[in-house]
Structures are given as C-alpha cells and as structure tokens.
Length: 49
Image 1 (spheres, rainbow, N blue to C red):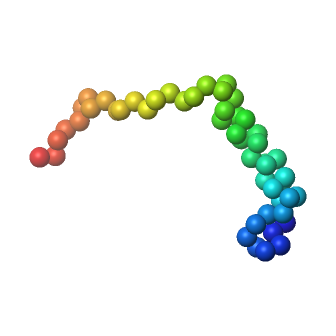
Image 2: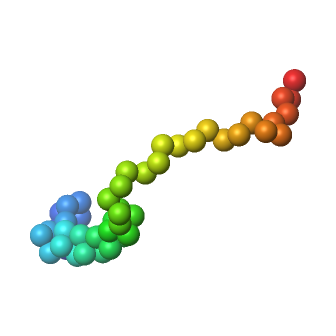
C-alpha cells in the first residue's frame, strides 16, 4: 500500500477514497454552501477591568 512509506499506491488511494467519500457526501449532502459565521452575542459579557 505504501512502497516508499510515504505515498500510497493506486490501490491505496482507491481504498482511501472509498473510506472518505461517504463522509464527504454526508458533509456536502445538499450542495449548498455553509452559512456565514455569526459573531456570538456579547449579552452577559463582563469586562475584567
């Protein structure tokens, strides 16, 4: 699978792709981009000074 102990062989890449594909499919299931991050509310924040 790794004849030079660094790079996968073609069979190794095929096994890796088969293992990763279901995870990526689940994460990208609807094809829509993720929402933009929203800054957390500062409600209840107390300044340490």
